[in-house]
Length: 206
Image (cartoon, rainbow, N blue to C red; front, side, top):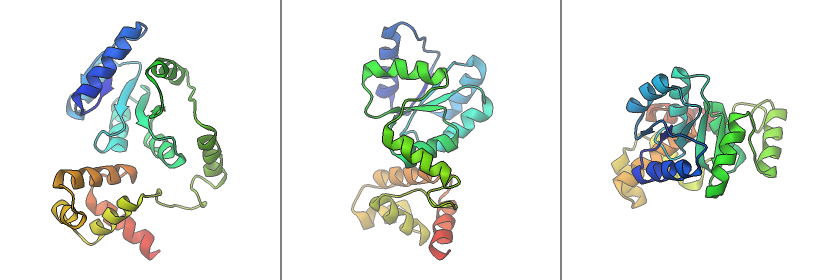
């Protein structure tokens, strides 16, 4: 089952996988409202979730809530320790790196279904450091590393700025600002702006 809110992505991926011959596509969905009943009814062997799906980590948790034994595989993930850990903590069983070619997808899915996950040496080392530090980079509860733009937007959220305010201050479109906010909330594993503001204040004042 493939979930992406970008139509040509989900349809292209389905066509590519169908050509390979060893996989059957049980459904294509653009939103969770339709996807969750499909997951519960069809019980696919794997659910593939587009990494750019709005509130992606929260979506993984919702899928796992209705079908805890079905692996969720996130596609086009940047192979950084922070990204991999964030998706793993959300409940993803594995990921397809953004550097993977078309020929790599099916072998990766087969390995994940068997409980395996190929990853780069740097990610493996980062995971070992993460575990040796008690599950966080510094052995305590720390927020994920934010990019410069994400930090800008996070600070604007803290002071209560709307998407329109953020768009005006950064000289970008409102839709782009909204997308940045969605990605930031997903990276922080949060669902609401108020939660993000509280989290940032906590770490700023702590």
